[in-house]
Image 1 (cartoon, rainbow, N blue to C red):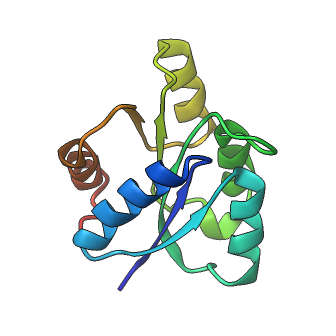
Image 2 (cartoon, helix red, strand yellow):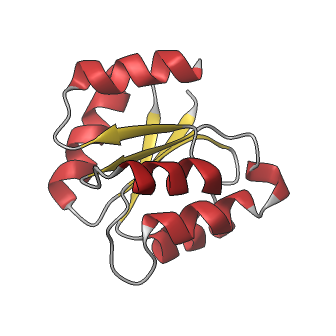
Image 3 (cartoon, rainbow, N blue to C red):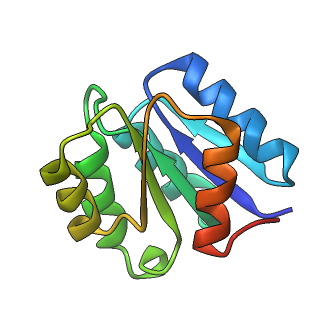
Length: 124
């Protein structure tokens, strides 16, 4: 089972996205912010194959996480999707330029997440 990482400061969103990914065959780890996610990756999730990350989080926001994640050569090709309330086109462009592969605006449905995963080519 491939590993996915869901990063969001909302426990409810982590649970919703985790359930969606579990239902389609992913083994899911979660983190409450970008710093926690980087710590998790450094310890034992080096083989993560998918990341879903929120933008607005304490300690290290999603954009900062994307930049730090992409700066590590072993993660440069891991599909990464920003899942956020940020709806401005400029924000979307900043995320994509930083290394996000897809962008989903909250609120979302399971179908939207699955469709984006299909676009990324990572359906399990």
